[in-house]
Length: 159
Image (cartoon, rainbow, N blue to C red; front, top):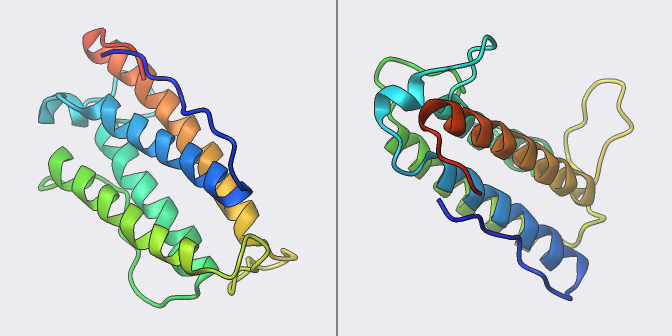
């Protein structure tokens, strides 16, 4: 897998943060591309983390933070536990659908200073800027985990 670099740009804050988040989202998807279903479920680390779990987890994280906490939408958030019928293809498609749903909300917001409608107990709350930065670091962190898992599984490197 060829190593890809994040895009360089001079843009407003929302465009910059979203562009870097999208790069990390796509990096995670690239890391699982071409992996067999067996390898997607396999964990070569003692924590039990697998590529399939990472895909399900990131979809869940974006839905919790943007659709749940930021917009206050009611509804079920997918579990990130890997069940016997889960597939990498379905998890990847669900993650991509999540991007579309989340992006519609963030680009419909009044701006990065808009506050989340739901706060955690004892928290002063957060705004969209904080949530997007958190999702950027969370996605980058887990894309890095996927780098390591993929290298352990089949030797593939690059982002």
